[in-house]
Image (tube, helix red, strand yellow):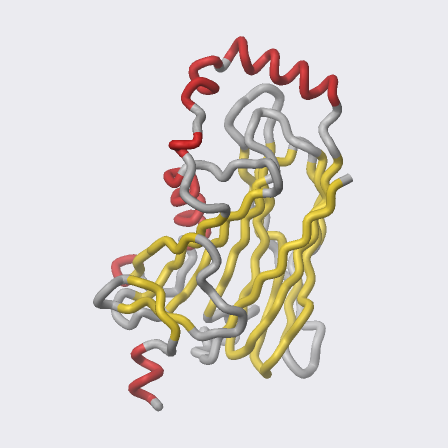
Length: 253
């Protein structure tokens, strides 16, 4: 059995307050999708996530936001985004927990979520992967070779984004404030999907932004460009990620 551990963080210095009818206020939301397989078969995987470090007096929550899996010999993965919510469990900082553990067969990817408001939070996600049996691997590969030959022929390195990871950043085009992030990483020996597929998944994850769609923009960051605990924004002139507070925070200080 292979065990993969991924740590990621989110940091917010503001608490805008979306009203008491909202169960948790999240000024910054970060998603991390881990890809476990890239052919029409996948392993059995058990995933779990927990908050491992907190600093501040705001709100934070982590959960397994969704997953994708292969069904029979269909080469395209099926996606499921269940979502969930449960009440506060901490008196100092409001910590909210969604589904923290799942087990799926024929796993293609698992997406974790971390949301914060006026605090720093660190989450640890762990995935236990059972190896695919040799018989299943041989049978599925043979069926795929017969039914989906053009699809296999088209797959190649040229279709993949550069580097071992990519982050899509959703921000307010008026201020440069970062609202949501989506990190895509691949387990050992697995390729990331093409840029078009990654952009489609990010758009799906960013669809619930509190900012009106006409004020929302998305940019890509490759590699590891975010230092733990730092404040970042998008420079409105260059459309690039830079360190520092948003323009609205600059004016209020």
